[in-house]
Image (cartoon, rainbow, N blue to C red; front, side, top):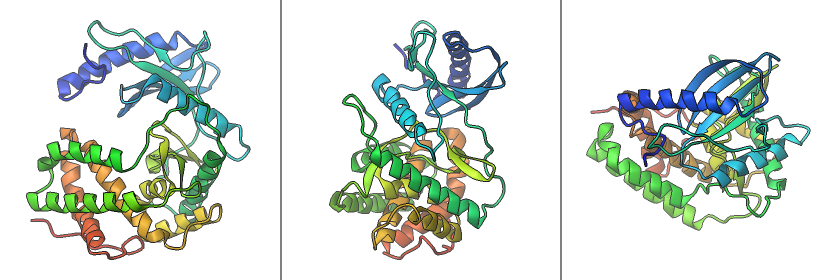
Length: 339
């Protein structure tokens, strides 16, 4: 039986989207919604649609790949429900179907595994456009600090299961990258990636883990997963949430920010939570780890190859600084000249 998510070629991608839309239309019927419009959003680790209803409320329908089990998906919804019960956080929340289920298994074409489907309440807001302001970066840091504080107080039920982001997951990603790196890396650059990965793993193995440093994290809070309403940021897409270091979570956001705004983000975070004195050294380790993971994730998609090649002048410059033990987080790093 084939995985529902098969899209190694353009033809397979088109076929996937056709059967996904059929699954989405079947799934909508399982909810008490007077829906009027379904709009495709994107294909990533999930296939997502925006559902608009006659009541003017909107929802997010997600078709999940088999990367996560039903228990893992349901655990995400349990965490989001707990976060939403807090006064100062607004996050997406799962919607139960007519029979009270939060994770549905929907029939699809013969020969394919049935995918899991969830429905979420839509978080209103807009993605930031143009350059970030100091205030915007600062508020994003405050938001992440609040998320970490809230997650630290969450008591998971006995059957709560979410992924762990650390040395093992990173090694799995590197194994994938080894299959595809020739699409955008020279042999010399690949050796630098390998050296950086070895250094990351060696640092991870000696890091001290405690409740102040490690816990439940969003794990994908880049700018595409933050919306703004009335000048306030709101987090969306917790599909990658799991266990990891809080600094790893921060690094994923800092990747997209200029050095000045990285500093403003961290100041916002520190207004909510305390950071250890030598946090920069660890944060730079996670910065490199997260950056490489991103390339691992996109390396298998031929449509991403051109942008991966274009980004290497910056990526390899950061790796160079990391391997040379030079602090780079708050510096403007000159891109490397590519051969």
